[in-house]
Length: 201
Image 1 (spheres, rainbow, N blue to C red):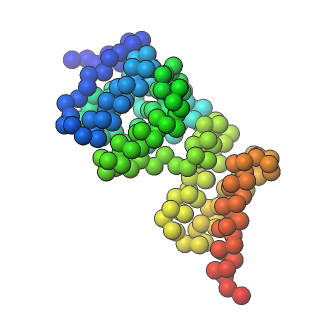
Image 2 (cartoon, rainbow, N blue to C red):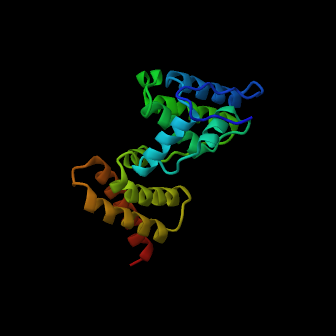
Image 3 (cartoon, rainbow, N blue to C red):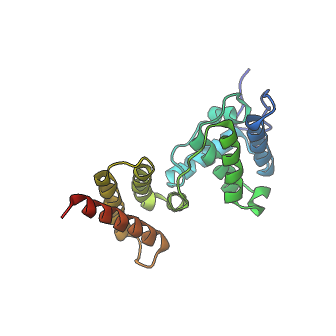
């Protein structure tokens, strides 16, 4: 059987899943797909790739991979799932937009938490930076690295240098009164203070 992922509209077959959070997650994905006017896996993949080129998404997926996220029996990768929901909500008309993208993402996170595979899409700041395009993608990656080091309680030195890199980048891109810059500057100042204290008298 040849999978056609290029039709303008498509209905994905639901996988056979036991009752529980995985099935609820899959049902919710199918609901979002229906509200987005049932774009084919090919069209979703095209929009995903266009968003990746624009710096909105980290990594696009093929049409067959998109199809598997709707019809496969495995739990999708967390980051890919987060981006799929963003594609459906922001690149296609969707009734869920009335409730807001963040509300829809929270629904997905809650299902993942019940499945036992928490999805980490990064902070709100990181998501905003990713959505602004190529000019800010490098800054978003620097912020992500610094945030990851904070979450892992990495060494004071590593966190200081990571936030310093992010601070250097943001000062070339954003004005002093920009909220994102203020957040990054605050994190850099905190990391700097910890670094200086760690150096001793």
